[in-house]
Amino acid sequence: MMTEKIPVSILGATGTVGQKFVRLLAAHPWFEIASVAASAQSAGKRYGDIVRWRESTPLPERVAAMTIQAAEPGIPGRIAFSAIEADIAGQLEQAFARAGAYVVTNTRTHRMEPDVPLLVPEVNPGHLDLLPRQARERGWSGGIVANP
Image (cartoon, rainbow, N blue to C red; front, side, top):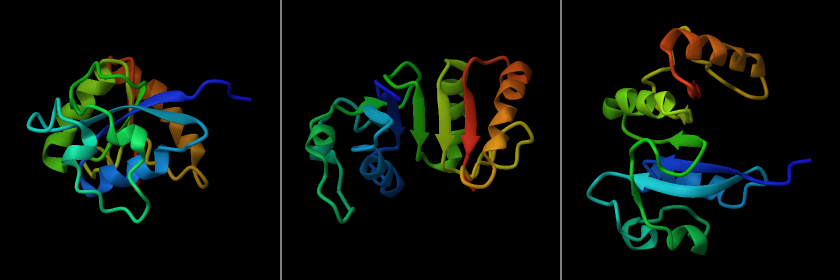
């Protein structure tokens, strides 16, 4: 039985996909949103003041009150759920993995790389076995997991 929730960050939290992550993770039994991150223009501002909330459920008050962090390694959260644009995702997600975070990416950037698990948890949880290879070959302490 898990006693503590795992702290997570959401990269690209102000966008449509980032908002879905917020909605799904805000009351998750295993995870706790420790930080929301977005572009440098949004950093330092209150999430509830910046986001144009598009979800059908209300914006969770605790998350609305959070200060947006710059999407840079070192923000709180052992796992980073990434909803950032594909054109900047590659280098940024790799920087998070090098810094020790596990990145769950929603972008296409890493999907076809041979050492990146392409995970559908109900179907192929064994793909996570690629993470030690990824860490060894790339020399980082975190990792990247892609969704299809």
